[in-house]
Image (cartoon, rainbow, N blue to C red; front, side, top):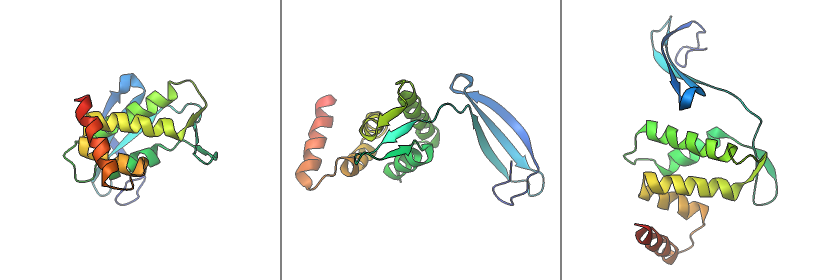
Amino acid sequence: MNCLHCQTSASRVIESRDLEGGSVIRRRRECNDCQQRFTTYERVESAQLVIIKKDGNRQAFSRHKLAAGLYRALEKRPVAQSKIESLINQIEQSLKSMGEAEVPSSQVGEEVMKGLLGLDQVAYIRFASVYRRFDDIESFAQELRKIRRKQ
C-alpha cells in the first residue's frame, strides 16, 4: 500500500478492525519513511452493479461517484464522516441486495434521498433541488411541506 503523503510502499498496520459484519476491514497504517498515518479499507468485490441512466445508457456503479454526491450535499453540515460513510455503505448494500444486475439511476437517487432525510434535512433539500431539478421557489416550498408532513 503506497503512502498517501510520500508515495513510499513501505507501511505497517497499526490497527485492524472489522466493519459491516466482517465484509469490510479497516486498517490504520503508518508510513515507515515519513511516519504519517492513513486509513485503508478492504472490501469483498462482488459482481459489478450496472446503473441505467435516464437516457438509457448503462454505467458501472461507482461508489466514488455516490460518495462525491453525498459529500457535496453535506458540505459544511455538522455530520460526522463516520455517519456519511455508514450511509454510503447502507445505500450500496441496499442496491446490491435488490438482486438485480442493473438498477435504474432513479432508484439510486431515491435511496440517497431516503438516507439524507434521516441524516440531515438541509443536505436532503440540497440534494433534492438538484436531483428533482427545482425550477423555482415553489418547488422548494413543496418539498419543505412534504418534510414537515412526514415529521
